[in-house]
Amino acid sequence: MKLTLNNKTPHAVESACIVVGVFEDEPLGGAAADLDEASSGAISAMIESGDIDAFRGRTTLLHGLPGVKADRILVTGLGEPDRFDRVRFDMACMSAGVFLREHSVTEAHICLHESECEDLDLAWRLRHAGIAFDRANYVYTTTKPRKDDSPHPLKSVSFQGDADMEDAIRQAESIAAGYRRARELGNLPPNICNPAYLAQQAKSIAEAHERVDVEILKKKDMAALGMDALLAVGQGSGNGPRLIVLKYNGAGDEEQPVALVGKGITFDSGGISLKPGANMDQMKFDMCGAATVLGAFEACVLLNLPINLVTIVAAAENMPDGRAYRPGDVLTSMSGKTIEILNTDAEGRLVLCDALTYCERFNPRATIDVATLTGACVVALGHHASGLMSPHDDLAEELICAGRVSVDRAWRLPVWEDYQQQLKTPFADMKNVGGMPAGAITAGCFLSRFAKKQRWAHIDIAGSAWKWGEAEGATGRPVGLLTQYLINQS
Image 1 (cartoon, helix red, strand yellow):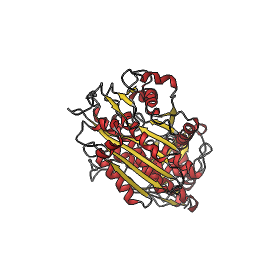
Image 2: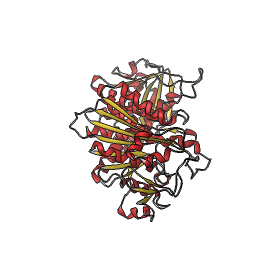
Image 3: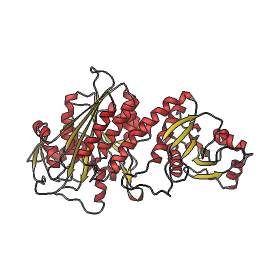
Image 4: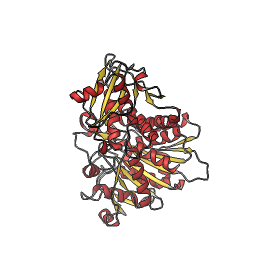
């Protein structure tokens, strides 16, 4: 979707649809007031009669208002003005975007960002509106093309604003591209998106940008490094594992990079500890950690950030067959630490532990791993917040702040030493599960043992990475949080 600026007076904008916002029990302002005046009070009259509902997220489509050049006006409810925060602003933009995606119009003019919101400046509101409308406009079509007679997504959107807002538009386009990359990879079926496919996607990103290099490690390379934990997870599958390393040099060789590490389990059957059949199809989303770090990497490159970035994807497919690793096995990780396997369905932490050890060679100033790691995180936080764990208070606060700014929120969980006892076993340095209590936290504690030499944080996105039920599909989260963090660091 193309994003542009148009600074004409709203009633003079020629468009298939102009989108404005209205508050509950509040005089009309901005573009809505301009359209109301041009149409001799038509919008005010419809609000008064109850034909327009200003409750948050409600949308009302008006046609052919006199004095207005746009064919349609989509009035979006903003709710109570004293409760209008960045989350409700995001909701308003998404609601309007979804409505337009399912309508016959293919272009629109947006004025929602004119509405005052917290202490957020116009540039933030415009940038976030651009990202939100692009996210709302996304439709998966790779294996299910839209029919010719069905509504098609928007092709272009203009925003009320002048040339001073050009940077905000360009930022929105870059971050939106990262979201799209992550969502498309997440939504692809596992017979297409396997470890080799993820590697090819990384190569295509590197080929498209000058300051990007890529390295792909296969079985032989990983075996030579002693990555037996990662290799064990993939040994029951006909699709071999990959360790994918993307490097972006935007700040010179002397500057320490930020490292992003993503769990890339392209399908998780549970292995020998086989998952129940119900909802197993959703385990194609178990590579959404990989998808989001690739999306954030691409957004960073498109933004041309003055930062060095290393992105590592640990990609494998967890399948049961005669070669698969078993409960009771003891694996030796790249770090030399031994791991007793109690459950082969706790495989994400095994691929990540070797990736975290590999990450040490880059001497990163911060390392952030992202993974759909535990169902326990979904129980704890639902689908609204990602789980954040870190022994470093400053890094945790930086990530929480980035999530707040980008409306891609995370909530911090403890990784206290107390929880480490749950990983004790007489047969190895640790076991790969800590039992039912605090399952998300003990998974984070497991990873912390492989990041002691790094300033590290772990983000569990099991609840936020995809929508369940009828609206099922990858969300692209936490591309927004990660990209905002990188912007702040640069």
